[in-house]
Length: 509
Image 1 (cartoon, rainbow, N blue to C red):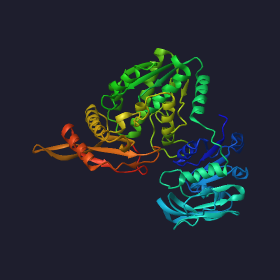
Image 2: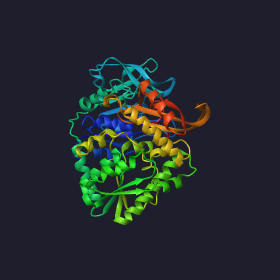
Image 3: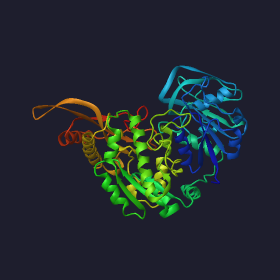
Image 4: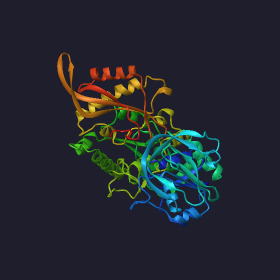
């Protein structure tokens, strides 16, 4: 796309997608590349600005990620964040040391409002810190523009060279004026003109899909979720009847969901096939308790089903609704492997297709929803809450059995039913039940019981990379607990998960 580009260089931080997303939300195109991208490639991209991400390493460590130091001589505005700030200081002659007292969480910071980066921002604000190292000596030509109680250099800049850095994370919601800081960098320092739109993305992807696929057929795994549905609409717009959408019912969908998905998509102008494969998946998962093994087994079996169905329609390409968070949490280069998503970490190497079609791979969930609306999908479908590809398999702690699936489906249905009685504006962004591996003693009708504990979880989030637990009304939670204990055979106790992301993930497995 012939648009201005802000380049995000990845040093292994889990928030790099948030940085890119924040920039795109300003209608400015952003692209993520690994930190070791050759300087000549960076020049060819001709970015108007470069953002150096955070990362888990220490700049003085043996395995510390690095980039070509010639980057700082290009004359392109640079913003270093967390590790990116430390790397900037270290590379340009400053010093970085281990903190005597690390900073994690919300910290009060003071900023110099005469800096272009902090223009029209309150001199004191709350920002998210997450570091064990800090800059102890500034490089030549730099000045301090922010500080905290325990971090004298919380931001620095060299105005002449257009190099800026912050120790905190402006890309996350927990930093009060983070979006304004990024806006100042992108527009006032980099000179962006906001020439990127989702219409451009649609046009570009349609062109790429047609060029890649040619006259071949494509098979898409359609789960009925937001990602796969939008993916189907986009690919269908590009190649029409060359696309066959296959709904693999692995038996681990929510209560009645398989029938609802078939009803919804059987009326659409697409080739729709439902494969009832529940027994097949359960057989493969028998006795498996490790969540990574579950995901990989399910991912492999999904593809095997696709291969079999593809042979029936002559498809040579496999399409997937993979999005950015799937990729990063599955351990993209330089990043920690949080958990393997079935459509990334679970794909077998001997997959029987000549290629993958993943038009949403570079988008965040909110961008996918915008794309879906532009493609004419219903609001109900586009706003559907996320559901993991492995389904209830990763909401059952321990091994999977038919009996456990029945318990969880009933409990989850009750919880969702009660939450959906709330006004739409007050509903959390995601809510579901988990069948824990814990059983506890209870009493019903003067008799001793020893049944499962159900955990219910509800979160609010804007990006699904970070999240806060939703403070649901106690009356609602009371009804949920009472109904599950009385209506679901095999469940006798209900607990509410009040952990944010981080430190937890949204799903339990």
